[in-house]
Length: 148
Image (cartoon, rainbow, N blue to C red; front, side, top):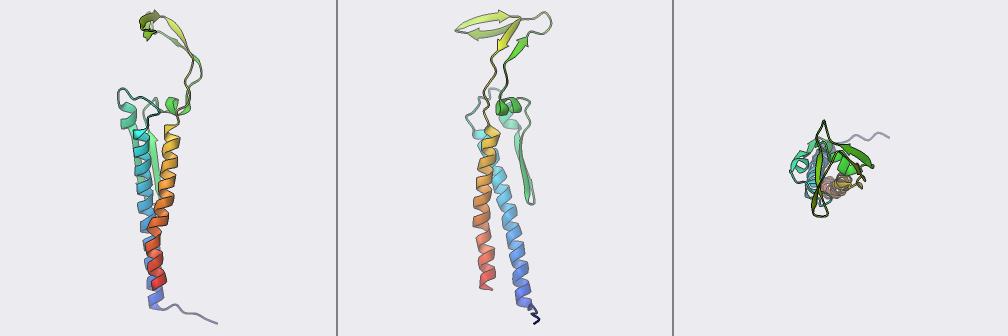
């Protein structure tokens, strides 16, 4: 038995393919935007200079997207740090406030910092947005195909 697709069916399949791709591309863009917004709006860290939040950017091209934080401190905030020694450079001293008093020292033992995974959270928000967007944006082309 041979089945030959008619022009109407071919046209409906082409429309379905284009609609699905366009919907998926739009969903990726929305997911990247949601992830960037989440990473910039987080309260997991204080950004006194604003450099870390400014370094958070997202790009999407077709069905691929990425979100990055290019500031040097991003990886330390995301992953935390182990205890480490901080030493003054050259013949200088370190100055910091402890218990309301300014303290000067040549060397301090830093206790390390706990991870504050703001990018991991942004990734989860982006994935949820992508899942919802795919579901929502593919309904229309599938309904058009089924009606053809």
